[in-house]
Image 1 (cartoon, one colour):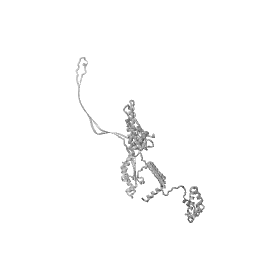
Image 2: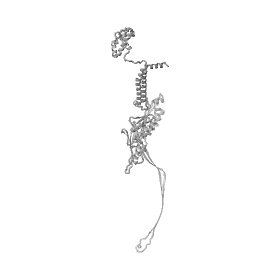
Image 3: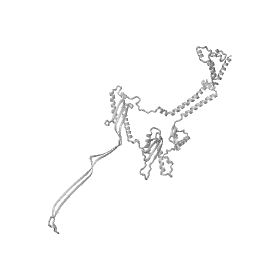
Image 4: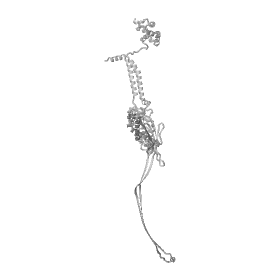
Length: 551
């Protein structure tokens, strides 16, 4: 057996059974404390199982998870349940078998509990509305940032004696966690309007849990100002993208910046136009009329005489003038269909009325391309070429009043890339606050256990450690504290000559100085008595017994 092991075993035997049992208990206690602290502080992370639950649902879910042996925790608000990471799917399957959670946002499963006997049309309609509200609320809760939702729908009612039909409406209350609640509210309005028959988006009102109105009335995104602004931003982004695609292969993505301002006209225009083409004609109808007229006219005349006044007298007539006529008429009417074109144009698009473009180019990049000895004239010529390239890529029109400006400037170092919003120090500390607290607590526990447990145990295991019966200075300390041989020690202690002391040595100037500075032996002995009277008496007895043993 190696000597080191033998010496270790011998040292352990020298401590005794009691001290070994005490040290073993301290070691076991230290290991237990460290183990419990490590398990508690490094327990698995929890993830959300359900949110927006009722108190009854939280209690039932806790009972089911406890019976299944799945750890869980309840959120600070009392409406959310958390389970260890990785057990979410198992917990949800288990709760689904039990029919949990039975929250107020029940959907079409309401019809599972509706009987067919004694169910009136009013009850059927109410159940349908409740089911629709629950399904819509579930869908809204699946949107990122929405923690809980409640939907109220008022359906239109048909009546025989009602002239105007009532339009459906809806109201939604959400609990939102984020800064963009207004944008989500607009999306929720269109979602609810599309899910309810006959419901328009302007009839949907959205509020948050604090009572703030997020969206109501007409959709502000459909106004002419919002539409114009959106079209301008789209046009400017498209033109800026065209500039980047044109200049990136030549200058690189970090050696130029482009800014575009476009004035857009989004007025709705309707144009109706009718065009006639006289050169293109088609016979639609032909009407021909032909008339032949022939007439003979003969006149007989009775001569005027006395015989006409005589009764029963027949007068003879004589032939008068005769005439005859013949007339032929032919009429032809042709109707032509003239070619015509009718154009009706309705324009809901936009037109760019004016455009301003500003491009700045990194002058160092141009010098790199042209060479270090590039003259200002060469740089100006290259800038002019870049301006032509930008004008071609953006559809520049001078007649329209467009303005374009390209300049070569020196870029500031460190601003080549796009600015990226980095989280601040406080945000990062807040994100990792839980981990930092756990780590700090674990370090403090380990330090306390090591300081108050391992340090005394190591001192007890040290071979030089011996139990002291009475606290106080040792015999050697007292001898060293006594004066030098030149001092009258015999008057205090005994008749032992000074030269018999083991520390006797010839006097030196340093000893003289030390003798002058040190207090008198009587004062030091008085101090020892004040500190520990019993211990001082024992030391004096041993000191007095030393000469007797020597004699």
